[in-house]
Amino acid sequence: MTDSTHSPDLKSWVSSADRHADFPIQNLPLGIFSPKDEGPRAGTAIGDKVLDLWAVAELGLLPRADVVPLENPTLNAFFALPKADRMAFRQRLSELLSDEQYREKVEPLLYDAADCTMHLPARIGDYTDFYVGIHHAMNIGKQFRPDNPLLPNYKYVPIGYHGRASSIRVSGEPVTRPNGQRKAPDEDAPVRGPSRRLDYELELGVWIGPGNALGEPIAIADAPDHVAGFGLLNDWSARDLQGWEYQPLGPFLAKNFHSTVSPWVVTAEAMAPFRKAQAPRPEGDPAPLDYLSDAGDRKHGALALELDTFLLTAKMRDAGEAPHRLSQSAAEHMYWTVAQIVTHHASNGCDLRPGDLLGTGTISGPNDDSLGSLMEMSKGGKEPITLPNGETRGFLEDGDEIILKATAKADGAVPIGFGECRAVVRPAP
Ligand code: MN
Image (cartoon, rainbow, N blue to C red; front, side, top):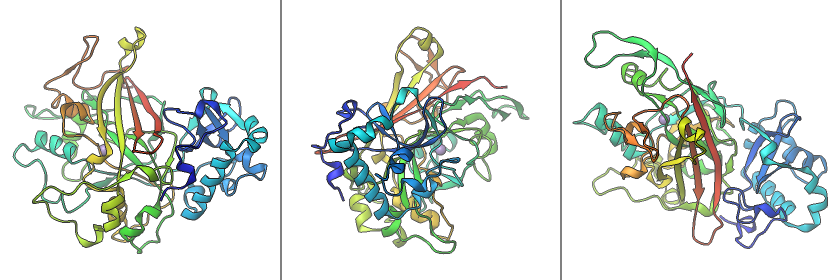
């Protein structure tokens, strides 16, 4: 599964790449960026630089980078390539950035990342959000249904809903607090106004690669070939709107006002060293139905990925303080694997398309310091958390910024990171 591009001995001639927390040469994530004063194009992050892949392709040095158009560029056509092509591309890119013989030609095509503007990596046709974080499902379920937190379908069906693609924005773009209807249990009728219970959700984003034809499901053993890569996703949620509107059809305006994704797509190939066995289901849980069951997926279907959430309030920003870490979770707390959610999504014949985005659902761990939303941390707002500077939060205030980060770690591998997924909350209009 791993090859020379993952070797811990591999070094780039880009000096900042060596031991870079996110983007050493073993990563090579893909994104769409604009250099200062120039139009958008495909790039890869290497250390604190971004390489212009279009320009490298124009020199004839890189296969298949030309599938990304220069006009309105997105990675959709690249995601659609067969896995063998994407692997060959990675191999070549790794050579170009490690072998000194290419340095003279390639070095002028690097830009300082700090001067670049990042864009959405793909034209997202459809977005689906799942609910595979079982600790989150339990914690939220307890608040809505104390006697019956986990519904009986949870351990049989990877629960999901169709989200809204149009309001997904790249990291850095502010999120505007939504107006909406809310009704407290002791009120007779709803009122409308700015959400008072604005929250974030720490999620992993899954970028779909080659799609499937309508009516042709994806076998679970083939599911990994349909995943192009991964990113971070913040599924902003207005809990007061959600509590009033969600029955009987599920989330709607409480979720679709804005979702934030990280700009860099960490490819499925880059994540090869960080695949691990899915934890066995607890004693007494049902086995997955056959179509969701695969020995290879049990052996390699989980990801060794740490997930961190930070909060930077306006007061902290003004005081020049660093963001405060709210929690540390991990992708291993997913009850269903990525292959299982991809397979389940297409199991009725639904066609997935290159550049579609799947969210895993909030990934909380089992402890108080590993929760993936404020709704859980503050017990529905009843027990606000206290920050190091004395401020308290039940939910998010205007001016608060949420920053998600992820790092993949495994024995014998160079750790790679996802970069940041961040956005600041602006007041309601
Ligand atoms: Mn969600």
